Image (cartoon, rainbow over all chains, first blue to last red; front, side, top):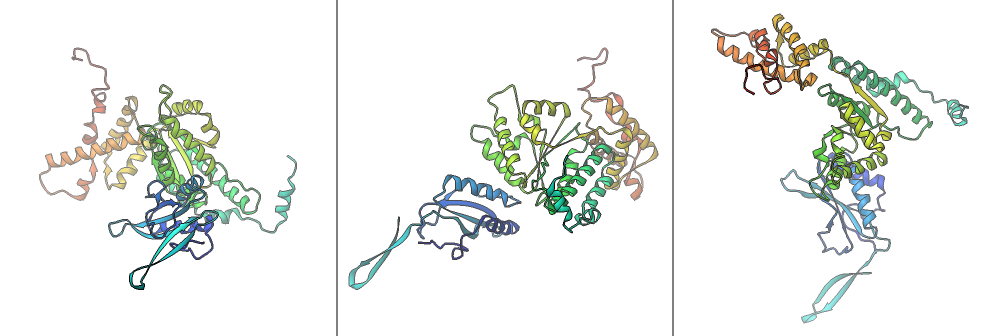
Length: 129
Length: 315
């Protein structure tokens, strides 16, 4: 099942040229870029593994693409996303986040419905491969 | 060489190129003119840069016509004594390459060994990569590049930085131009020990020392930039100063001169304080006189540490 998180996730996957263009947009706004990856796309899994530190003071998207390529090489079957951090408010807040790599076959997110006291129901989701 | 059928086919294509128009449109002219106006002397360097610009312009036209696909190797090596304008020219080169479209952003990242080489195992690679990422789309200027390689210490981390640099110089020729700078003889030894670099660097530019007259011109340009001027006595004194300073150790061309002028300004300020009785005009405030320059230690044989002890003097 296709995971839809962050920007552009309902669109077809971005190719490298499109990713570069998006990164250029981020850099033009003076945002720092971080590369993160995970094998658990559960919506509650907010904090993904960081691939190195976020990159500050870059001038060109190529620097990000280099790191992304390294990350893809190391984790070809993981979800990889790029986060853009804006520091105008004094904290590095995420302004933009988009998935740039998906595993060949994506896991499904399964919903578990449980009966509870007084006909109420509890819902839970788990990632299944 | 026998005529390449591909070239003939391309020539048959009606798309002709007007090099003069290309030259006008690229804005290279501005950079070259700035180079001429702002840099005194350095004729061989300017000539080399003009040649390089012509080559790149033609190459770009060829690429537009589909005659060649490869990005030419643009990595350069600037050799010359300190203070001969290597960094300044590198900055201009970045602008030039940007106008010609060979680098996307055209900024200059200037680094030395400390910025590339780490302190402990596993520190060098991230550090070097960080610098390279920042330099992407621009020009990486490595000052005194030979310090990267220390042959007397085989466990030196510089070697690791060199390997990463070589790899990136080869793989990302579209994205990054590396300029290395340093003394000619030590650079030669560095290239001798790292043949990979020599083959990857296409342009070697040698920066000659400035002649006395050129240094004088530089001095006047520097002072004019700060709204100072030399009076006739001071000009003669500075001429003598340059000739004397050149004989002494640690002479760094324009940089020595800049320091000398900074000190002259200091002495001028002190002199104005000491002798002024009445109101001063703007002209007084901006004129450097002969005594401001003659007070330099250079006229007494240089710094104490550099001078051989005189007779009867305790060492």
